[in-house]
Length: 85
Image 1 (cartoon, rainbow, N blue to C red):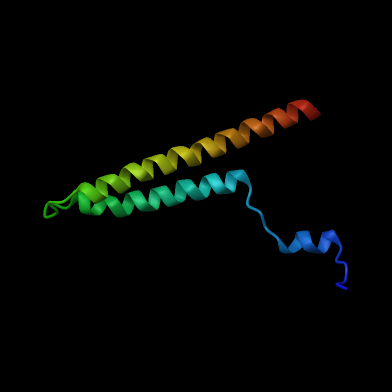
Image 2 (cartoon, helix red, strand yellow; image 1 turned 60 degrees about the horizontal axis):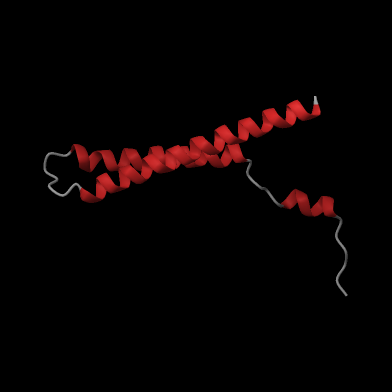
């Protein structure tokens, strides 16, 4: 038989990022990817721009998704404050 562990000790070892943290991480990843893709796009020697342009388009979608996560989290927090206030 396994020993029973109190829930309080289990919750201390698990870190779940907040929605805002997840949104910010998506925005940071998007910014980093966009910076990397800008170099080959700006290079006059690069003749094949397909992949950098495709990746920059993906970076845009990631940034929009991250911003939407942050916005939705803020709206939800506002609603919770309205309900409990």
